[in-house]
Image 1: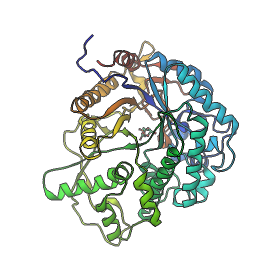
Image 2 (image 1 turned 60 degrees about the horizontal axis):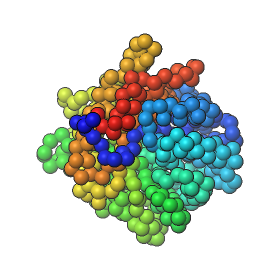
Image 3 (image 1 turned 90 degrees about the vertical axis):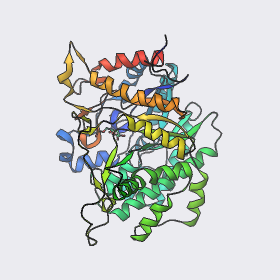
Image 4 (image 1 turned 45 degrees about the vertical axis):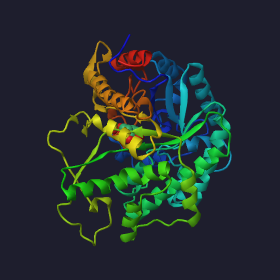
Length: 462
Ligand code: BGP
């Protein structure tokens, strides 16, 4: 059957999750503590309804049934993360045999079900002991991360061919060091830039370690949350504001990992304001040499900005927001169930930018999705009728299709997320899955969108 929207052969259909958000078993199987376990002990009131990460979706015990469900809804690929503190409790030293067995089982089960494992090495979950040593501010932690990455390649690289060093590395920078929504809840731009810089360095070392191994057909990449930055108008002030927001929130990581160096304009700006992180001379060549093979793009919503209305007080602490104001564009389409804008064309703009300015690097949508509060209200006959999610996915797939027609090198689409999961301080507030999860009983029930994506994946289009 011919479809209005057909996707290239072997397109990757699937979804993404992260260890802390689905595994549960936080104190089982020899796992060490990570910053989420610690922060929840410290300040449970910072988490929605005071629900912490100890149990989440219990994938640790239910992975076989969950993988069977993935197969049933047509997945040919699936991204999960390895928990550093599970694999190497404390973040350095011996690997934990129980963790090795668990991840081996997950990988083998996926492959046996015809689902390609995409493995991410870090999704916001710093081992607590390493955070105590300064986390990403400490260069020693950068080295330890590279050792952890190397251990993962050696343990699982015979079967895992798609590797990612980080998921949204800018989020721990923003959350932990600028805007206070992740541990360690520091608000200090200079330290934030140091963390960002060390994350890029850690990424480059992990890519270098990958390249010294011969992983047949192996690809190494990173997953970035790109937020296209749209100015309010064509006026120079608005345009400049958008360009600076783009430097901070997109090009900081994107240029470094794809082009091999930080944008000159960003370096000049940080230098002018005395905000440059400390670095070693030889890092420059390392970062330049270790460019990625494959880019995962997480896209939820754009960033709309305008020129500053009031100049910042130079005595106030430096923030990226010294250079732009956020702009609530009148009439923009909203996901009112989450409070985020929906702008489907953003995905197209991202991909065209990658084609035109980033060597048309091989990419895929590694997260896109629609969070909904109190989703039970859409339950009919025991199933969540999430037609809004189907429309959301369709809208983005149409623009993705357009980008592919125009020559963008896009290889797949993964939804955030497979099943409803615990999401950091939002805990279970926003539901994103194809599969609903009853948090009390852990019962899984496919939503309407699961049936729909099954047909789309099997027909490779719609
Ligand atoms: C992405 C993260 C995911 C997930 C998602 C939804 O940025 O990579 O880990 O949490 O956002 O977030 P929320 O539940 O806050 O809507």
